[in-house]
Image 1 (tube, rainbow, N blue to C red):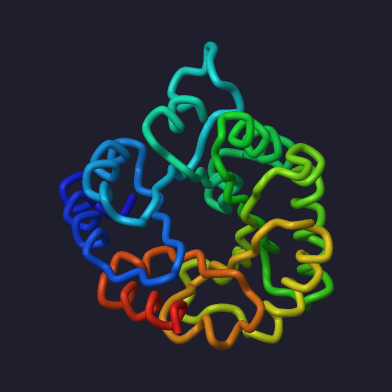
Image 2: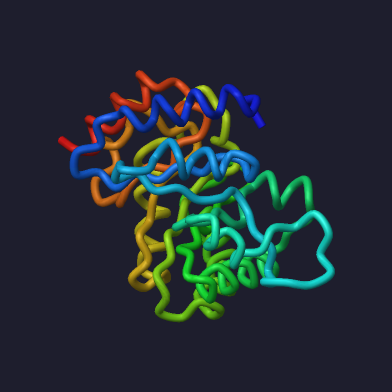
Length: 223
């Protein structure tokens, strides 16, 4: 909730003009901007998705948006389990797993956010991530899933987590996540990707609102 609807539309128009090269790019605007994303990104290789979904396709869930409707709107992805959803709305690991499974059933690729809540060593961080990831793996089986590792303490921070810490935790996640692609978020931006060998991509937050910085990050990913 950092942009107005009009600002989001202008941002989407700018994203559509970015040179993505061989990089697979997806954007996750607010629910109200999904039709605008479909229009702005038509004819480009950039895909879009939503920032959350319900665990059910239909029913008495006022205020929720079903994964089936997201698919109907042309979404390819949906984010589940973001730290802010867990903190402000009480979403737990079981609920995140249900949402991921519902997304898969609707034909969406869930982007599952996991990460340790506070600063700690890599071993403790890996244990926290393992607890969050296990229900998702059990619920989604061999389906295509993207795991976004975001140390909660690094979200919105001045700097991302230390690359050594990130790589150690990612190695443990990869051993548990099967064929899932693993991306890093948490103050990700220009200059980071080359410092994380083996990571499958970056999960950008507010840094992506700066289209020039977004373009620099894409160039680094494509290099």
